[in-house]
Length: 289
Ligand code: NDP
Image (cartoon, rainbow, N blue to C red; front, side, top):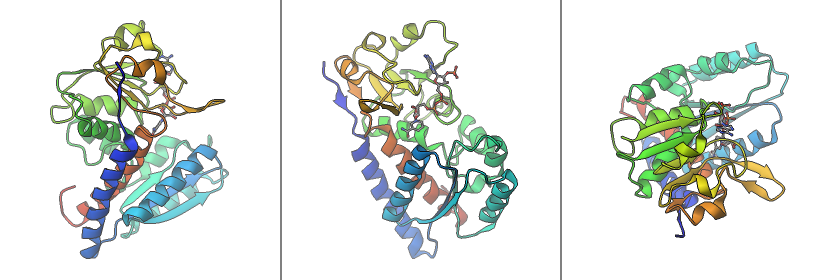
């Protein structure tokens, strides 16, 4: 079997076009959606992500404010900046790029973002809404994975979904999304991590296998159920260039559908961040997200 490639780039383009239309409709009503990004320090990967997020904002008609701060920025200064952004009516979404420098308590900073402006959906209030099945905005990467599955016609209802990785930004919120009763969800979800006793036993029965591990090619061919859909979240820089968490060549002989790296989940993350920002802007007009 040669798997169908789930083209994240093409699907993200569709989503961005829809977001551009929504942004333009809001703009015509006097509200230009605005996203403020806060980047602290010199992490090269973070700079790449934030640059592409800002470029994408410009393309869909979202106004972007860039706050690039030195790694030495005291936590109190960061909190003050967030308070100013929270109070600014032109700012509808705030994105704090993670990771933050070690002297900054990440949770204190994420908690400070007004939940109504939380473009990444990482505030405990929004995570709680997600868990209760009434999300305002869902974290961008998990929301992007769900959108990829829906738009690729991968059946999730009743499917065995196995997520490898339990981070707060990917694994856990994805599990919370997929277990809900509703379209693009209604799955039986298993979350695996380094404490999982027999990883392969779980992955081999996954109809939908999501790898969010951060280890190049950690998911090998024998770990994959024939005919399954494989979603590779991993981005690993190796001597061979960027590779995912899945051995793509082996997996594409076994799975029925698979996301490539790059060009799979990555572009969807940015598209969903834009969608979240427009949603938050719409909510300030009293319209449902
Ligand atoms: P984290 O490092 O926060 O989490 C990794 C998870 O994988 C942990 O839960 C860890 O378990 C688990 N894990 C590690 N090794 C194993 C193993 N051998 N067996 C089972 N589980 C294992 O990573 P993130 O979730 O932040 O990111 C994961 C990957 O996705 C990275 O490559 C990252 O670059 C990429 N990423 C891509 C995005 C995109 O837009 N495409 C967005 C965000 C991330 P434990 O908890 O026990 O330590």
